[in-house]
Image (cartoon, rainbow, N blue to C red):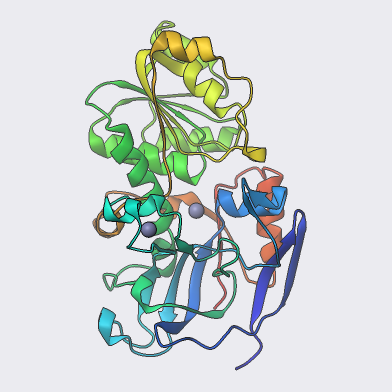
Length: 342
Ligand SMILES: [Zn+2]
Ligand SMILES: [Zn+2]
């Protein structure tokens, strides 16, 4: 094999781009060439904090779980031919635990998740993945669109939990790739009063272009847009420790809150129990995704959702540390970065 570079995160603020010799595939696996891999907010937590909650980096690892790839040989069990573009579901649940048995595969505590330590991910040119994770795609789908199916799946799962209702007032906190995907899905669901909040103006501009009805950089816009009533549904998709506080404060009495974001430092701070209790809030945490890939593929394939508009920056593996630095530094204009190893 020619030299195979990978992006390794060694610890907080320590990224190294270096040669990587992937292990030979086992009989259940197939070697794939990565076509496109997105930089996710969760990847950024490994870079900024050295872990997410209890999932601490113990040894250098390769991140990357939002990706498309080409198998280097035929995979008959998946009707996939060598060289054919596929998406890869990063999660392999155990299928035997109590939660898998109940259909909650996204909550499986034994999940093997590509790109979460200790499992190396897709920020490399070639590596082995379980054959069972390959997802067949319509021929017209691009490598970048296929890599966006995973984050779109996160958005679909959040909508499944949130159960938006026609014509209710909805706040979306955070307009990164997830928040903007959620806004597009809300519009598709028939919601029109969508208030989007983000500190960055270019993200608010994008939210407006994708169907948000009002935008602002603070909670003040909620009071102004709802005559201080609050929103029936609040979907939080930020990385802020204040995210839960803001979501509670944005909610109407008797409202619903769905938390999708991962807060910096693994802590929500400052939230007032009284503000949540007095509203009698229905509070839900969204974890990864359920069975969403068929819907994600259909939404993109039929142009119901525009994932291309979210991709603003592209990098080679060699340049890929820059993708992390720009995102940490909140580069103006940046929404979603793609690493294109091929
Ligand atoms: Zn992700
Ligand atoms: Zn399980």
